[in-house]
Amino acid sequence: MGRRKHYANQARTLVGIPYRRGGRSISGIDCFGLVAMAFLLLDVKLKDPLEDDEGADEQWEIVTGGMDEWRPWDVLSIGPAPTSHIALYLGNGEVLAAEEGPGVIIYSIDESKVSCCLRCVE
Image 1 (cartoon, rainbow, N blue to C red):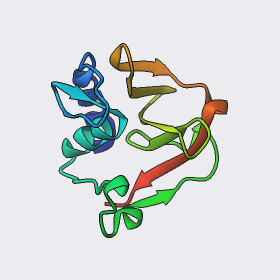
Image 2 (cartoon, rainbow, N blue to C red):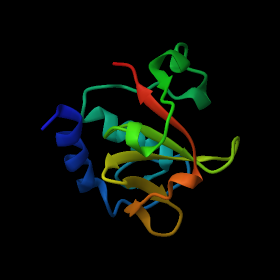
Image 3 (tube, helix red, strand yellow):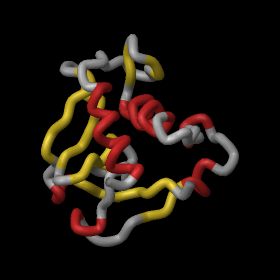
């Protein structure tokens, strides 16, 4: 089992954290906070592009192709830009996402809703 797949399984432990816009902790988290917290399991500190961190765009590469090309730990942009939502791909068509209302959940992704797939360049 690859490192990313192993940690994708560990990321499942984040299910149930409540949603809070701008949240970055287990007391409340939004979609970027969830992805950033999950990446900490890999010892990767993500730079928040919303805070204009220098080099944030250099951390990512665009993955072309559909679900067949996605790997665990890829970040999916769901919905139309610029108001899209992000989620962490776990593999087998499942994503980990922070949603208003239910908080952190896992669900099966509809590939047609994904506008972009990004892979962290470690």
